[in-house]
Image (cartoon, rainbow, N blue to C red):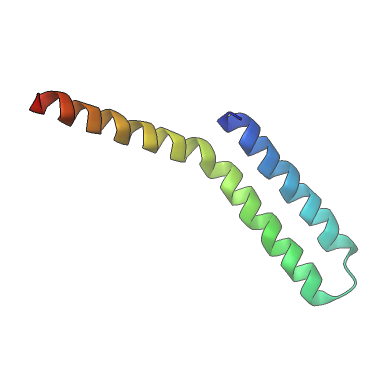
Amino acid sequence: MDDEQLADLHRFLAEHHRKLAKEAALDVVQQYHSDLAQRLADEAALISRRTAIAQRLREGEQRKKSELE
């Protein structure tokens, strides 16, 4: 699964939980689904950023390794 597919999955799940929150009869259940939807949406937005950071870290480690050789 690539980053875009993972982000799409998170967005889909966020929308699903928003729908469940709207349908919930109890406030506590509504709040749970709303909070979960927000966390999933936040994660979807950060996936590509985290991948870019990890890639830069790997490149930096490889540079250090090659400099030591």
